[in-house]
Length: 406
Length: 108
Image (cartoon, rainbow over all chains, first blue to last red; front, side, top):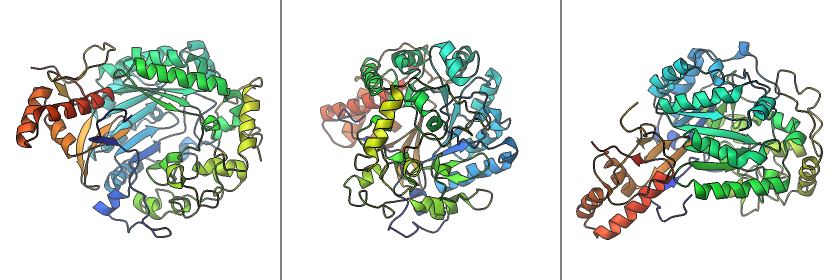
């Protein structure tokens, strides 16, 4: 972006920093302008962990939440009202599979009424034309449809679900028929990376305005399955070049957003745009997290939306304050000129691989674990991939401890 | 479906010039964010921050007036040279069109 002159319109995915001075809460809670200025722009709502697919890179935690602990319709509706008052602009209705909630329409209706921009993140396989029409009628703004591969047989194998592709093509048609914008989301890994150009072409054919070429991020289920998913550096570089070529070819036709695997990036990613800075995540049971993987940091405690107001948790919750800003940093982050660019990378990755979330993310070349960490990707990506450990309740029990480098 | 939704999709880039008539599709929302004291454009998984000039232009995209007509109006209102205004807003509108924020309007 920003390749041409126009500077009249800038783009932010983040609000202003949520903390004014280190160690001090930004402000008292209350529905005022100062509060909105510090509020998250986006809220990811994991409405349920139920899902008909079993993708081995699922971003849900390996300890999946059961249906009987999920928030009620009224509780989710209240979350929407609180979010709008706090200053959230966009909500991402995700899961699991959000359409597994029979009350999805009731949640979307309230979200739209209070002015939130509503995005449905779905695998599509259980959606019907009638249900989508109803969601549009109550105010749904955008649909993001996942595609596991353009090769239908490989897609079925990856998701452990038969016949998904045919259904997804139907759903894409209904979305366009309803006049809604469509994003196609393609999670990329070593077992489908050879199809990147075809995935982009598929998204264009489906009439999508946007396609995500999203390399799997190695947390939760994807960390368990890393050896089955990690592409070689050569495959990654080839795909990156193909994305660049497609951006040129399809300029003005489709927006291509690419997410790269940080094992092959030069610098650590500014995870979530900085901890507790722009995005808040709510789990099916109502736990409020600074990112969807945050529960993997076992030293943190998380508040539940059933116990405290959203604004209070966002501004003052212990898990949010833990790594907000830069005062928590140790060396080499503390004196690093990039500390407000990448925020020391990802806290979850630092915890998973070093046992201390305040350490530098091993994705950073300044981390003492960096070389060892990169070697893992090199070795795993060149070895025969093991069988997938599919995402299902209890599925990862025996594999959990096997992939740490430390 | 409303009148501003896209016609049957032809995958070609829309090139913006003086004769182009643009509109914001239904799913793109230009709003004033009172809490943050600024204008925003809500788009699929994007939030754009238009400055005052951009807001002036976007508010005039009524699906009727062409880019030249809007440039002339702004040129007179702000007493700025027409060619400068035109070049500036064509570049901005092309960028927003490429990002899927604007579509060609059916004039009528």
